[in-house]
Length: 125
Image (cartoon, rainbow, N blue to C red; front, side, top):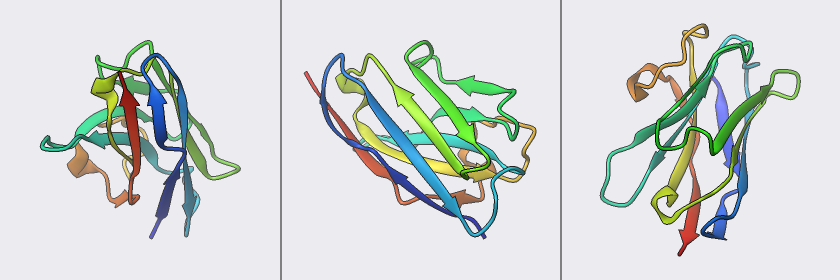
């Protein structure tokens, strides 16, 4: 079992930045791909970004490419999401997730076995 806890969400003005963190416990995450998903009110959960176990492969949704950066520290057992150039459309609950197929950066939420409780990101215009 992997327990995931997100932090770093909050309220920010359009154009601002936030850095989300995901702390893992229970097992080391060095054999998991890690992903971030988000869900806005009234919408389905959507893929944001994912990173393979070594950090060698990263995958981004088109809507965040060039603005968001995912990184990981397998020693500290953490994953981070640096979000720059935020706009109101980025407002959502952001979830960290772990995928056992550690060599793949899947965009499909069903591939991910473990999920955090989410952290709210609100971007005001």
